[in-house]
Length: 418
Ligand SMILES: Cc1ncc(COP(=O)(O)O)c(C=O)c1O
Image (cartoon, rainbow, N blue to C red):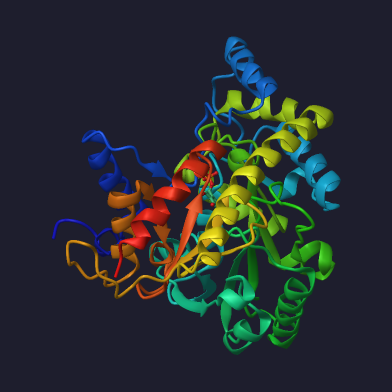
């Protein structure tokens, strides 16, 4: 082998494999509703107009040189105001780090805190923690979540594992489930971390929380977003927030993320992001700084955007519930936040009209792709076993009309399974 052990151990995304299958069928002229990628069709969900204009303007003003390593000061100031206004969180610009989208924030949190062999606790299903553990050679501590708890990890499940752990990676609203922590559930986890850190000797590495709230502006109905530091201010020294524009402004290709936490940790993250050169483009930073302070415009954009995402998620949820009421072995969890719906398709072991047995969730998914023109992602792509018959549906690249059209196709395909 001519590549490093690390490179050999890195696995590609299962979602990319599904995308390959979809593209193949599309080439053959099939119409597939692609609910696989956690992205937006920017013609259905464009970024805010003022942001778009601001980016173009910034290029006209030649904002094309290196940005400061921790991000343009104006943007860090705007983010400081944004998180104060939205969550009541007090972070000064020096405790905020800007990066090229939010992935570098997650990776640099891992690199700044986790040594090889350190324990990192995270739920399954969850998004990409397995890859970051792999990259940092951390020891994975997996919390297998359950539908009864909306696939969110609980304090009770985490408690046996906190001794000696370095990082607890949490996400709410959660990718892939679109579900969220309740106040009580998150408080119980916070208290666990506080108690664990009190029990550690001076000089011992504490247990940190990586709190990914990328979807915090996309919450529906009465579901409210909570964070560890607002609930338990003493966790400020131990919490690193991951946040950014990719999801809440449908700006996945704009690449502006912001993280915040204790200056001591954020300064190390800044050095790591700097060495990777994973800054956000300067023109985008300049424009984002100006956009985030236009509160009225931002609120109007979010209200419209959120409403449309919710309409799609609700249409899909109701469609699946309708199938359930007709006797199909399907289920769904009420959408709470993000752009995802959690769907159960209990068809493992069934036989297709061609006589093929569907052995696991991957088989069920490919059956639906070929026979209903609908592509989901099995939770196995997010770390669960292939026997788990729950799936993620992402609504960012389809319209509510397309969702309505897809339900009869699912009904027909599932009714052919014996
Ligand atoms: C929970 C969560 N965190 C972080 C990210 C990374 O976002 P970005 O595209 O800004 O790197 C994603 C993207 O899918 C996500 O779902």
